Image 1 (cartoon, helix red, strand yellow):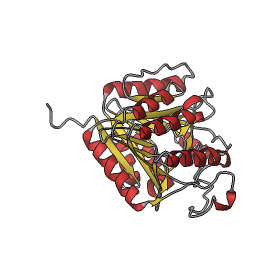
Image 2 (cartoon, rainbow, N blue to C red):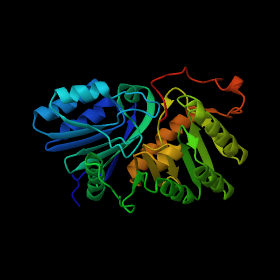
Image 3 (cartoon, one colour):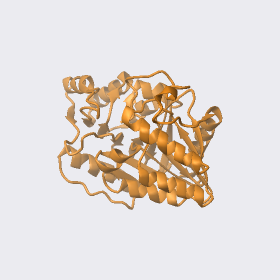
Length: 332
């Protein structure tokens, strides 16, 4: 075996690794770079893209035009890239929101992330990104990009460890949870899907030790508060241990099973994320990736406090212990 060959999977952790880790990936590009992004608001990343463009890398960028609430966060980045001569387009109208965060670098690497390419997510939030060097994974993400770029139908393979929405992502997440036999650690900000809630409760009932790191109310829309608080209360009734993330804002989407496998990506535990949006996640099993995910989760868990979600119908207690509202931090 070639000891110089890259590991099949590598993990980025935010804010630990910062924008520099993404810039380093872009700086590696020699021929082609494909970027699909929910939010691009980082001068460091934009300048790295410009350097790549100037050294002859063929770059195409797709940006989500607006959030589910109508905010147009990418207009400035779109205009800037266009002024530099980039091929840039809005994401496919087939999806009300494209929440995917992916980047294909030449034919040798792909980044699938929970974080946006925005300074906030490099400095203030807990987030993850998986770099894969698997040729099949790279080709599938490239095929998904081409389909959305050309507004054509894409039927992803479901046997390569990628988790696509709106194609069976709920079923794939349920399968991962169903596989838990000893431990199930979940780090997600939103709980708005009855199928996944039932799977988590079923895991606890069969004796799995379940830990949930949530973000409380912070970043949730008014309509998601009801489902999330109710789901957290139901889980607590069945013996799930729940803590609220402290210090860092919780934006990560992570499920860890038995210390041997994990799923992470752009999709929240949310009906819309499963059924109508373009989302992308990845299953991981590389030991060094799992170890770092475990270590990060345990660090966040140790710093967090036990959390009992308030009654969703009694707003008097909804703000207790919460971070100050941030209009630019909303879980779509």
